[in-house]
Length: 326
Image (cartoon, rainbow, N blue to C red; front, side, top):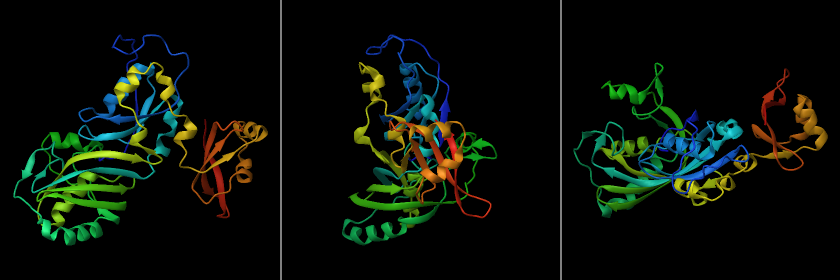
């Protein structure tokens, strides 16, 4: 991401094909779980889903957070019934690294856009230590951020990027995001390297743009790589080519239980599991003991049974309600 995070479900054409390294044999079981992909530059997140949809012979895929075509790094793809878990995968912390170019501004806030300002901005290496401290103070913690106009955020029911393509000029309202930690390193007079750990909904493109404004000029995003979507890192991911050529592609699928490892889980015995599957939600309060807003329920065999969310009863006391049974 940068890219704004959104949940996506996509129908893809299922077809057998004879690409090198890909089997035409039907899968013996329906895939269900997550696939960690190290997305290359040049592919859209939707391109990745289409290719995996053909490989796994399924129309039911989604991902937990868009990556723009220029971005590389960790893309969590969910397949089969695990698409129900998308909403629970976008809330973990995310870490991005890359380069910010000073001195130019574009209409997309990254180098793929049209240049709208080229007035120049440079930083002296001798003054970098003080400049870095000021930037970190300004771009750490809770900040207000105006998303880029070129984004999938809807304006009057239409995606922002569609309005930009027609030549419309508009600004999206600022919104609050949280930057847990930011690090900046001097590369040259007009380039800064960054490492940013942030919350859902943060646009790294907007941070690049706003750093330029903060320094009294312009800036845009030159490169971006997503290294972490908690609890996973890009070091655990495979390239899409590696997955396509794998002799047993279903073996790279992460279980639903692993996908939800960031949430506190509680084990049900066989009787409790049966009751829960029969709609007897009163057992939730007996099983769950956490201050968190979401709890994961596992079977005695440590398989995902359900996800529950914290609510309040008529007296305003904490209560638990099923979000869904898996």
